[in-house]
Every structure is written in C-alpha cells, then in structure tokens.
Image (cartoon, rainbow, N blue to C red; front, side, top):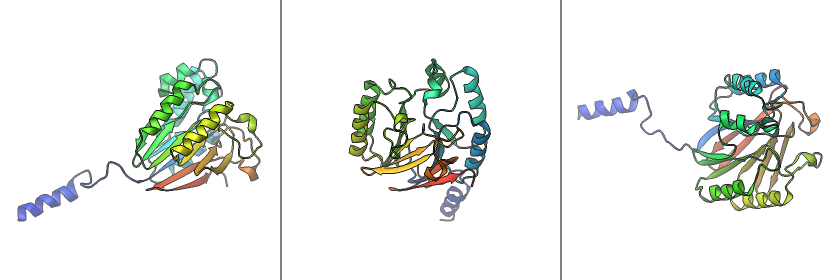
Length: 254
C-alpha cells in the first residue's frame, strides 16, 4: 500500500507533464494582426505589445507583410518576426505576391491556403490575395475541409474582406461578386464563428448571419480609416472558452 502511494506521488508531482493534461484544450487565446508592410517601427512596437500578452497559443498574420515581393524584403520580415514569442501562422496578401511573389511565399511559408486544428477549434487560412487566387480548386477544397471538420468552433482567415460594412471602401473588397455570395452562404451553412481579414488599414467589426467579421489591418501600414471609424494601430486578441468566444482590441498607442 505504501509503495502504491509513493508511485502515485511520483506520477502526480514529479512527472514533467501533467498526468491529466488534455491534448485538446477548450480554453486558449490567440492574436490576429494584419498589414505590417511599410511600418517597421510600428510593427516592432506591435510585437513588443503582443509579447506582453499572457498565455497565447499562437498568432495569425493577415498578409501584406512586405511592400513588394523580393528576396530581401521577405528576409527582413523573417528577421523581424523572430522576435515574436508565439508561433505565427501566415496569410498571404496582395503585396506579398506581386511580380512573382508566390514562389517566395511558398518557399518561406508553404502553401498559400491550408487548415489546422487547435483544441476544440478548426482554423482555415484562405488565399484571395489576387483576383485569380481564389479559384474553383481552392473553393472545392474549402467546402470539403469544412464538411470534414467536427470541431466546436471554426475560424477563417483571408487577406481581403468579402464585403465592406462601412460602405466607405467598397473598392478594397474581394471583387468576385458571385464567389463572395457563395462564400457567405458557405460560412453560414457551416456556422463559422469568426472571419478575419486585413487589407483595409484599420479596425472594422460586424456580424452577419451569426458570423463575426473582423477587419484588422492596423499592424503598421499607413492607416486608411479616420480614428473614430477604426483608424488606429492595434491587433485583436481572441479568447476561446469552450463555445464562448470573446474578441478584444489591443491598442498599440492609447
């Protein structure tokens, strides 16, 4: 009996990994930011801000991390994000792939659209950087990916917004109208909880058909929006607690 108690003591208190640690946590947090190109000093300040946040599982960058696609600009970005403590998942933006930049993106970050699971949630990263990027093949992949997910929460990330709730920057949205309508229908059908986009340099939040759409492009690029309409430098923290999800703006400069 004493030996059994001793063994249990060692297992519970001396084991380097918790005996009952869950491989699928339902409580975790992550940060989303976008459009850091052309604002190196601001982006460095943003990284410092993110690194102060406790208990982050990872970050997602929403694209336009370089002004134009070149080997040197990519290497500069890679050098900067080494300072970021959480793991980074990268979305591709239009500036990142101009003039043959897809080969650079694939070289340094892999596929331009993909998905992954974390805890009780499924995360989908799409590529709509250019008008021809979101093709039939990617759309078929998206529908199959969502159909095969049994996770409690679904989050989607892409660079360009698929509609403009402000009605101020309609020219900056994803231009394929039919595809946009189909995407909205797919997001509604599969009960996507959140869709995150960049491209518009500022903060926008709206709810449509039960899905929260957040535009967060305040990572360092010159701002598009007036301050009172979301024109400020920031990132967004997401806290997942089971099926309950909270989003909070992390202001860079008060």
